[in-house]
Image (cartoon, helix red, strand yellow):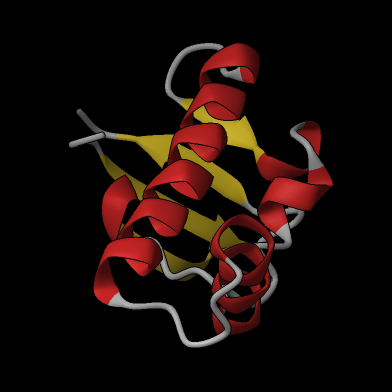
Length: 98
């Protein structure tokens, strides 16, 4: 998971950094914590597990659809994109650097 990426939309940079640092929506973390652990105030262990699981699914989806080092995010599962706490990312372009 130690890859540097950028996400941009119409030339506007939305995110640059490591995949494992992508922001996940708080309501998604809480919903998943309730579903998996019955916990509506997730501790750091539950929170970390949920975020890591979401990011692993995101990486698997990227790896399944990417050709070269670029991918338009609308080509992957929208449910995964909707979990990211980033504006305008559904039709954005993702580039992988490492």
